[in-house]
Length: 421
Ligand code: AMP
Image (cartoon, rainbow, N blue to C red; front, side):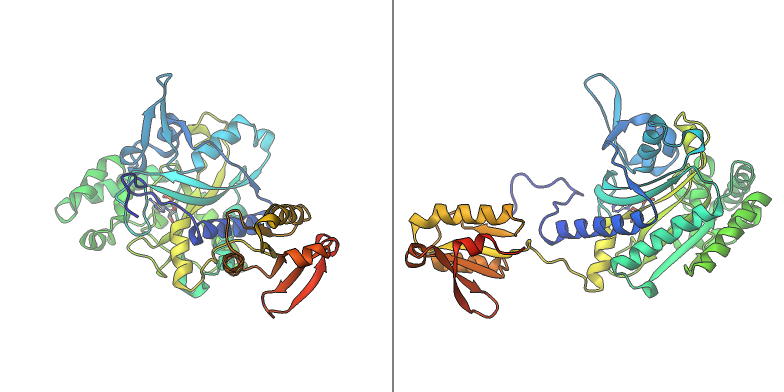
């Protein structure tokens, strides 16, 4: 119903099937990630703004245009987290999780906030699930993280044939600056054939021009120098080994020269997983990369890291498209109904005892008639209904109705309250 107070533009209330879908996505995350030794971490929804400006980078769209920033009562600039990696790394530094060369395997799930133009699969408050592998710079770490993202979606129920895993390398602080300059020169030389945004980026963040969505820009930029050809020997070797490992464990992937992720902290391996199932213009359901410079940017000791984040709303669209829906309602083993008002309190207490014994049990909390209670039991999907009525009560028991077979038997209160779970 439209009301004076609606949820803010770009946000959604999760309830019924969509709330169940979020729980399902987190359950699968817990299962898949914990099998590989990852542990949960939950960081604050807001951080000092600097965590994001330093961590993500001033020249990015996320920091430049999309953050929800406010001043708190102490005059400090705070920002609702637009992503979770910077917060996780900040927390890992504070808690010394990677001190003395220790490694940390972490995962999270929760809301993120970006002031974007809302559209299908793009919200202002959206939910991400992600994993971060801190302390390893090996190709094995990259292959494990990419494999984890792939397996997550497979176990969630998205057909592998409908997904594409795109992989690229962004180089490192040794080889990227030279490449960055060559892209800047390329953009300026071809400025007449590129959009204003690409030309503006020549100065601030030229690599981002490479993933301009404009068809004519894409055509021009397909002639630009390739980052893969400009990698230094250690980066090229790292990249080669990641690919060998992905082949070894059977993760299908494609090289994508135009894949440059929006956040500044990425080094070397970057990846994105796409599906067309159920998506609008936004078909990236998850992505991530290596961020070996992030710890230092946030005041920590140099520590390598790699991770990914996946979008819950887009995962849900993909699942709906392949026919995976979440049932509404919780389980109900038994509904305790009463035929007369003076047995209402008794029914309430029987249901309470059954729940204490571990059963999923409900009773009427209003003043419904027995007929209405039977309807409610049906709606709740109750397997059994215990009907409290004066005659049976006088004999110390209830009528137990099997809602599936419709069979009814007399059962004493004693037997009912000692049912095996
Ligand atoms: P990013 O943090 O930009 O690397 O995004 C990782 C994933 O989060 C994307 O692949 C999307 O699935 C999802 N995502 C990013 N921004 C939004 C948004 N505004 N609304 C919904 N999902 C998003």
